[in-house]
Length: 297
Ligand SMILES: [Fe+2]
Picture 1 (cartoon, protein in one colour):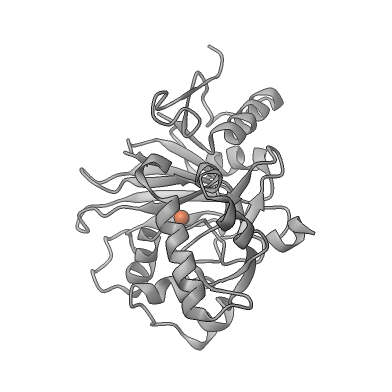
Picture 2 (cartoon, rainbow, N blue to C red):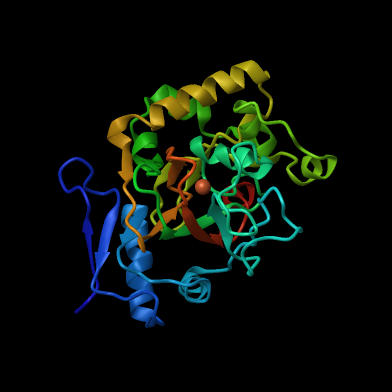
């Protein structure tokens, strides 16, 4: 069987979210297979693979086909004891270090609820994420979808006046800001240093396709040179624009799905589920080669 990549929704969103079949990505890829997947990412922005029985080692091996892997240093408890062995695997679960479902008021759980807000992974790092790869190890019986918004189509749909107004704007991104939107401010002095704002361009050009996109996230809390309330009002308007239903694909997870997305071309958010049930997802992350400020230069 050969690898096949087809649109998941050929009618409504022909170029957004592809479904890949005919390949076992838990096994080593040929260079041709890796190139076909990369090409699919450029076209779709989100790729879905079913029935991929990954462990962390095989997920890391698959991820390395696409570039340098990022450390999971956006975690609240980075540097402390953690549930997963590899520092290159993000723990996107509701489990504590003893594999028990976290208490409702667990600080780490409350911090992680920030994932319910629209974001692009690691936009709060100077060099943000290129691809994220999320493997569904255990899923709840209902809910817990991940929604993706296509920031290329959303950019294209802006009027010309808005496009020229935002062309050269630079935003400040920080997890301190996105968490404060939900009322979470339980940060240590050390967290505040680690999560200090970084600069990101608001409009990016994709290095492979040349397409422009909005680089938005709930982490963006300021625009350089703008009064803060005016900046936040514009960012809120842009997020509202970019997440209209016609730009959004909602992924309903099956166990052992692997979904891979391009953070340069999309935003995403997690949806709620019964907090008493287990949801165990492992994420590997391929970093961009340079900051968005350097990309523009
Ligand atoms: Fe995320």
